[in-house]
Length: 391
Image 1: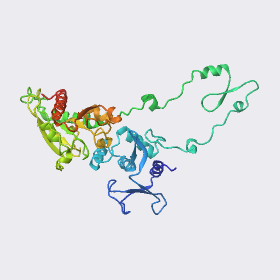
Image 2: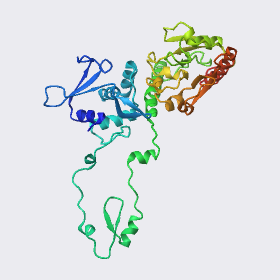
Image 3: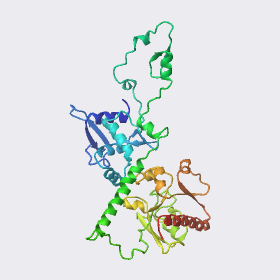
Image 4: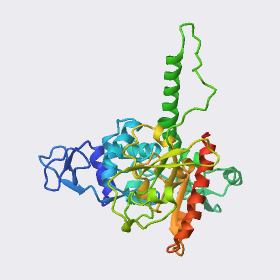
């Protein structure tokens, strides 16, 4: 077996000792610090297999191969809850494998299943043979004179008996549960499970906690004073890329959103802050709204922060979403309003054209047009806030 994942799977199935190693060969404290992984087979006094954690594997997400480091992180958290696993991936800035994909991968690595729909490996012919071959019926090997043989679609021959042919005409191929449930097109519903765990469950807990705190001694819920007034909402959040090559960075985003003026990031001193605030008065809202602009999700310590994200700026690279609650464009832009800012004349990548994002064009030299672009953006955000209940 020359496949990297097949070798790793054999070690994990055999319960071989796993060690994380630094570049100098010393043991590492965790998977982030480590450079290599080694396995020590049972009965052996030293490690007999060593692989780089940065090597790409046959496990694919969104058509891209995932490095071994993410696979080992998933294996080390095989007994952790989805929330604990997600929190650790975000803290270590590692690829987060969604619940369904993670379950499928762990079942395959542990040997509970013989295949994974996300692992593309070539299986040797001898691996496909389940054991002893089926013995052929002597009548099929040597049919009586005058009777021909036809294939029944299962590798054996059957006689051209009219009654048998009639039965076979009604035969239907067996389908596995994945094909039956998913149909011909593979659709990943893992984001629904993640939503339930990170949003619905937390919301239910918060609701129960509130009811418990407001319940009177007679079991009646007391109405809070001034409940007829609009509910105070927390500051909405706008996420932008952390790359210095992005159209908008922490250095120039405030100038554009507050003053409707675009300045190239290289013409401004670099910002060392991960957060800036922008206050904006919108026509259909009763008072100015303060927005939090962030370029990473390290401060998202509670699921409720994702409820406050009203816009995500993207530069078209999927790695930007690795540590997001929804880490694929298909999931992310179902929940958050997406924007792809680009300069006039620049080609928009084909994959971005397929994303559910608003493409916004900036002029490379005519700065007077920035006002129109900014007005368009704020009008879109205003509609989004009204949809979310801001007044």
